[in-house]
Amino acid sequence: MSDIEKQTTKNGTDSESTPEPKSRKALILKIVAAVVVLIGLTILFFWIAVNPRKMKFHVTEASFTQFSLSNDNTTLLYNLRLYVTVRNPNKRIGFQYDLVEAEAYYYGEKFDSGNLLSFYQPPKTTRAVDRWFSGQRKVSLDTDEVVEFNERNRNSGVYPVDVKIHFYTSVRLGSMNIGDFKVKVKCGLKVPLSGTSATAFTTTKCDVDFNPLLVIYSD
Image (cartoon, rainbow, N blue to C red; front, top):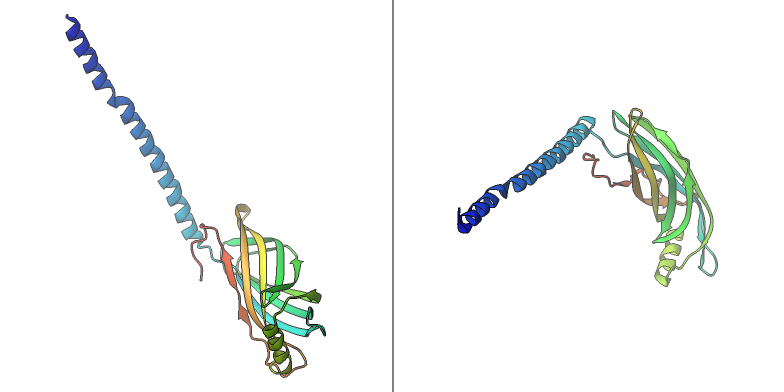
């Protein structure tokens, strides 16, 4: 066989064998993709079956027994009590609440914060939590905010207060822990001052920011 024929035969053999590694690689990629899709569908069907829902927070009572400014309008003196209900609407999963912190704000100024007790909440239960905010805090209110504060004190006796609650929760299905997630809760309140003609506090639903993509249903 001539050198030209040998070279042709060699090139032909290489040409025929080249697709084999490529086809093997494509097969592996298809298998990996199929496994990923299968895992995703399994998680999806599992969460549809469990039907997870966000916890629900309501402030059922809030009032100031003191809420005033110092003579130089630089210090806020306050005594605020809150009653909060926490509802777990799920039939199968429970929530473990850890590192719970509550903060109180007036016109964006945080005037107090404190920790709440950690607790576990079984399915289909409601728990009541109360919290006192009491003390004094330096604030930086501008002239218009001071005027409005004093007008509220003389007239309506109702003050806008934002309460923010931050915590970590473990989602539990029976004895199985299926995730630890950070949760943020914000409650925009109209809080009356006791001893004034202010109307009674109205129960307020809070906004719950529960981020995990696994929680696919809420109401």
